[in-house]
Amino acid sequence: MRHMTNINLGGGTVRKLALGACLTALVATVSCDSFLDPKPNDILAPENFYKSSTDAIAAVNGVY
Figure (cartoon, rainbow, N blue to C red):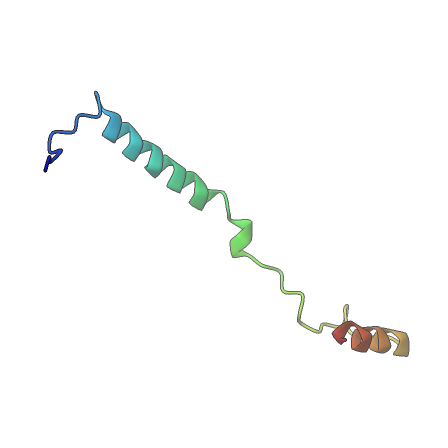
């Protein structure tokens, strides 16, 4: 059975892959700030509360 203990990936390939992975993780975490500030749509505020019987019927029909 052969064992591959001496694996040579070339000059600095592992370092380049590690640097690329770190940079990718950094870009992924910095670029999603709007994801951390959600705007909830399920809260009944005076602006989105039912104003007429047609709104209430549409809400009930939306459940079905």
